[in-house]
Amino acid sequence: MPFDYAPAPESRSIVDIKPSYGLFIDGEFTDARSSTSFKTISPSSEEVLADISDAGPSDVDIAVTAARKAYTRTWRRLAPAERGKFLYRIARIIQERARELAVLESLDNGKPIRESRDVDVPTAAAHFFYYAGWADKLDYAGLGRAPRPLGVAGQVIPWNFPLLMLAWKIAPALATGNTVVLKPAETTPLTALLFAEICQQADLPPGVVNIITGAGETGRALVEHPDVDKIAFTGSTEVGKAIARAIAGTRKRATLELGGKAANIVFDDAPIDQAVEGIVNGIFFNQGHVCCAGSRLLVQENVYDEVLESLRRRLATLRLGDPLDKNTDIGAINSAAQLARIRELSDVGEAEGAQRWSPPCELPEHGFWFPPTLFTGVSQSSRIAQEEIFGPVLSVLTFRTPDEAVQKANNTPYGLSAGVWTEKGSLILWMASKLRAGVVWANTFNRFDPASPFGGYKESGFGREGGRQGLAAYLRSDADA
Ligand code: NAD
Ligand code: MN
Image (cartoon, rainbow, N blue to C red; front, top):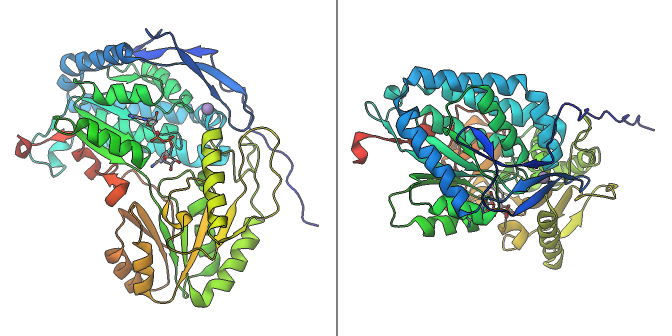
């Protein structure tokens, strides 16, 4: 009999969650004008964590006004190296408060502490360090001499990587001299509100960062506010399209980071054990709540049996449960609504004739859970091969030749990422040139680095975040008029 793991829960005593939160505007927490509020819960237990303000249009207006004032009076005028110092300070405080941020993220989002501790929080700090370094070097970013900031950025982020998406948005905006109003997702506002405290701790000038909470209507009011110069959005393709329509014909600039349906392509010469780890990381990392998740596995036909057997064996060892347990691999699904969507699409997969498989897996009684799931015998036209499930569900297809792999991989309305597994360098380069995807990983998957640009083709959106390219989204050069 294999040894089982003893429970190893991370203590939650390090976090201090208040019963209710106001909005963070002009450097202070203030009560919202709107009197409505909503609860954020822990998706692993359904325990209510806090009462959150639901910002209305007048709150949005106050926040945008504060950001405008900070932009014109302080932030834009500050020496670039001084802006950089604030970003370094924020980065260091994120590191100092890493455990607190990780525990809070896992509580509010449901993701395993191992991931929030080892991926989300350190990568968030890395983004602030990276863009801090750019703050006084913008003349050398390839955007002409002395590129200028855009003004006030309205930023709307999703619930899958709450703190990390905040860092992706705020770090480049501040480094380039813009000020921001950011709205976190309604199910995961707590780390953004803790980040507001970090801004206070860093003595960031008031109004440079404003955090307003609320749901889609709050996001819409922010995006449509006439004094917002730039929109940065990450979320569903549906909302991305609505935003593009809402700002069409205005002077607003936008970057949209939307959905994906990435192919993870395994050739017969790939190191199978490594590829299986990459497949697991590709789709079961963060419960599959990842826009660039490797949700379509394409396996070369002659290694199909071998790959599937290894994969099933590996899935049987994944541990699902308490997000705060350091041994947990798969945490809770973020919300009841997302769980319903995953269930619905999985049922459609079965109804359309694919074979469904999950390892034996006991699901906790409370909270939102879905077992790691494989679908084999999936046809290209099936909805589970075309639509983003955004859950721990992998659709498996096969191919014979590199041409067929490319054709199947590109047969999607999306184009965010792809993975290629092979020993052959020339094949990697050939595949990378043919795949219509913003990021192509070779013999790895879901690897993020602040120096590397990230973004989509087609319905996955436009614009790049990260790297030198990520600066362009927040700057105006002389060529722009
Ligand atoms: P969503 O796009 O509705 O929400 C993302 C963010 O946008 C949230 O902060 C939300 O409050 C805000 N928002 C909603 N409507 C808005 C509007 N009209 N104007 C401005 N902001 C608005 O995503 P969701 O409903 O949470 O998830 C639905 C699906 O979207 C998921 O199943 C998944 O397929 C996809 N998704 C993708 C990503 C990604 O990273 N690409 C992230 C989350 C969800
Ligand atoms: Mn929550």
